[in-house]
Length: 130
Image: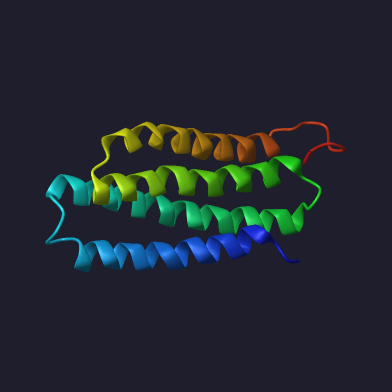
């Protein structure tokens, strides 16, 4: 019943709360309103996808043979790293080139949710969760 995605979800939620508090208290007097909004977007997406990782972990425990669910979790975690991570760095360091990484993380999020959708759309019951 052990799932790496449950652990990743817990870690990402923990760090998301910490980063959110840091942004709200430690950065609000340092960053511009625009940069703070960018930072907050990173926190928001991290927290939602942390919950998504919990869901993937629970599904993986129910359907351990599903490759789509495993790939969904991988893409979701990678999306957190690339999407939220690039927004944090963009907001704090003001390196505009980091904005080019953000859409790659967004595509990872989309792939993750698409894989979950496809997991439950398979018609053949023998390969339903492959």
